[in-house]
Image 1 (cartoon, one colour):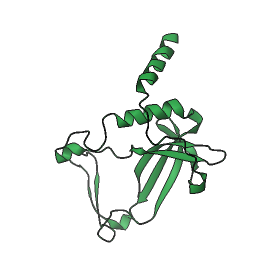
Image 2 (image 1 turned 90 degrees about the vertical axis):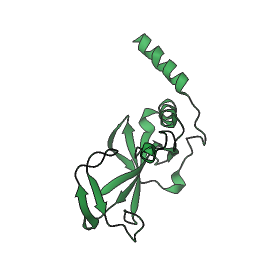
Image 3 (image 1 turned 30 degrees about the vertical axis):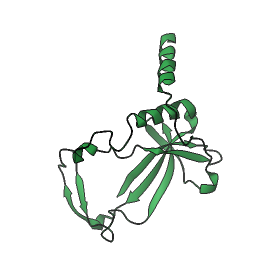
Image 4 (image 1 turned 120 degrees about the vertical axis):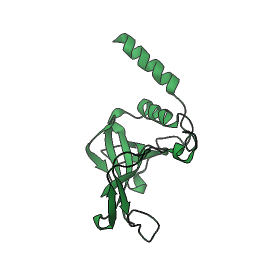
Amino acid sequence: LAFVVNKFYAYANWDNKEWDFLMDCDTAIPNHPIVGGLSRDAFEPKDKYEICRVYSERNIPEVNRAWAMTIRFIHYDRILAIDEFGDVCNEGPHLLVDYVDGKVPFEPNWSVQIIRSAGRYFNVSQIRPKKKLRKRVFPKKIPDEREIYYKELNEKSNKA
């Protein structure tokens, strides 16, 4: 079974295979700090995901928008049981698996792919990123451009 364990906003030049990703904002797995009695913002600063999304939409041309995803695997023969119901924090099926060397649920092999994004939807364009083709597009600190972004959206909707 394949699992997306990391999913980041990314840039991709589909012609020359240049790429970059915003590693500050992993959107793959919703974190649930409330399970441990912590506030919802315990692990991520408030509004971080929205700031990253807005930056990507304002600064990365739609044709170059992508997702950078880390994919990890669990072999079927290591599945010990399936809990069909889940629990109060995570509904849906849960897999109970034998950990590799008692440390991690995933096999040692993994894959990183850059997949074209059209909003929240994927199509078949993808890149297996090579370090030498990384082109820095995202700044180290993402500026908060939400106010400008919403003003631009409002102006567009008023013209329509």
